[in-house]
Length: 84
Image (cartoon, rainbow, N blue to C red; front, top):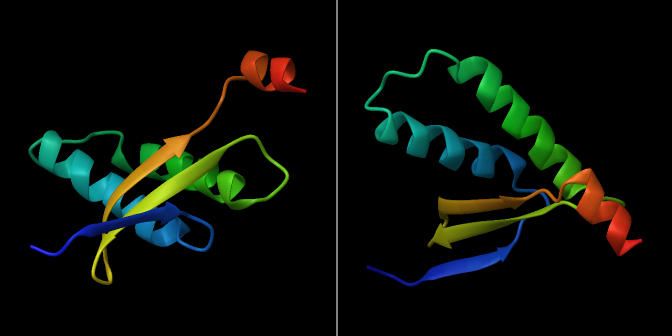
């Protein structure tokens, strides 16, 4: 197994959304009634996080060229206001 490289996700929205979807399908053993809506919601948040003028951001982990991990950090409005 090669090491996993973790970096700030910028143009990696599709890969991060794919990791999110695949991991949830495994965790839910293929039964995920709200799959489409939830993946769309997370994808929208990832797009927001990729924009430089937001408090949100995400990390993408890769093993070679394959995306294998992601983390989305999306502060609440209260936390974002306190940081300003």
